[in-house]
Length: 296
Image (cartoon, rainbow, N blue to C red; front, top):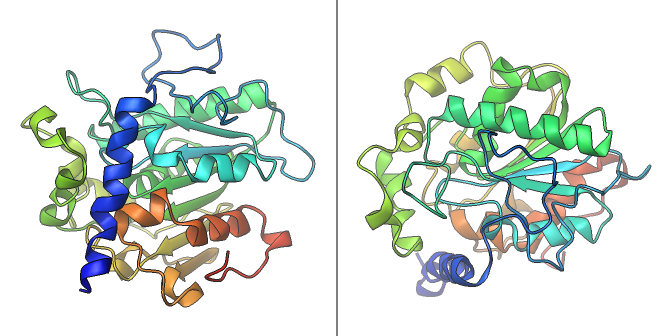
């Protein structure tokens, strides 16, 4: 691995970790109708960002709200400081949630059982659809956030409410526990905060009971459009081709096929990479795609 490429992962994570101290991880623009008894917390962006705006109504050009689903150890703000404004600026109603919280562990989420997190997502999508008046949503997720929604689609009725799922470096077929624990150094303080049991890590190990159930009978469900965006330099979900899905309505994309000199690894592709962001926009609006290149 080239030394300058090796530095990109920690650099991206450092930027994420820094935002934990300067960006509120609580809702600044969340809907006042959110029940405090709900099984999830709703986080919002910085006040000027324009996402998690529950007064937003989808346009004719972009008729579906976009729900962003963070990855393991992420949260609804820090994972999306690049992509959420990127999509808002293109006219989308954009929302993000926190899920998979463990008792006593703040800021670092996506650690609870995948099936319970999928139920939180189901509740959140219903809330977004009710607020926007849309019939369906599109989901974009990073890492676990690209895999976990598939549980919602397959087992919790999500297929009737979701048009497209875009997974950025998703853990669709699992990885090694070593790969998942390699995320810890990217988030200063996370290791000390974690409890001994982190179900989401176990659930994402290749061959786990959750992944076996999820992938039995096929990777996809009818009626949903799937896109996977992967990077060959992924050091967490390995081998990177295990991220790909197989099915009749699937598009698997390798970032380096779009931009050969893009060196983003697992964290960077989902947090700061604008080439990946452009491809997300293409996946959300396939009728109006433009070429994704290094200049995107």
